[in-house]
Image (tube, rainbow, N blue to C red; front, side, top):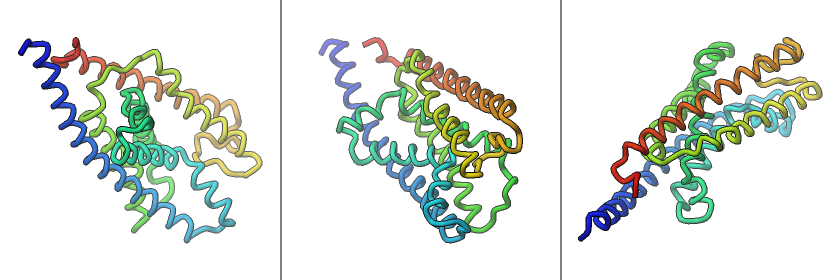
Length: 230
């Protein structure tokens, strides 16, 4: 068998094994995400002091919750429907890398800025640790194991910032009428818009830096792959 053909056969076999493993790990990721989100929602809803609809809206007004929901949906698609059009779309390295960036920034910002601002204990601590700690670490591990070997088109990185930018716009538009800002660094009522816009720009720059870093790592790993030239 010619060497090129042998490489293709071995690569296809390796991909099948790798895909089976990635699906099994995706099941674990989906269960982890559903557990954290479900527990956090249960605690929030049962201890609510606002009408049910406003409670739900505010629950999904947190970047942490939205991003954990996206991560969970990603794992569900990878586990249950990898061959469909949506499965093929989420398999793109850019999608997995962007999601990894989002959830890593969630973890880093929480651990460095937000942790301890609101006391939590018991099951609240469990839910908090899952969505701010375990899910980011698990997604990073999944990215390293199954996503980061593919080439990432760095020219797509600006598009990755559309989601967090849209979130910030929504937060600042809804905040005055709802009297609610989910994070202290975007509280325009307390800080004023100039400071909030500066804080938002810093967050977007951090996201950009993480995006370029992880995208470059993925491309470096792809170049080192023995089958990257085929």
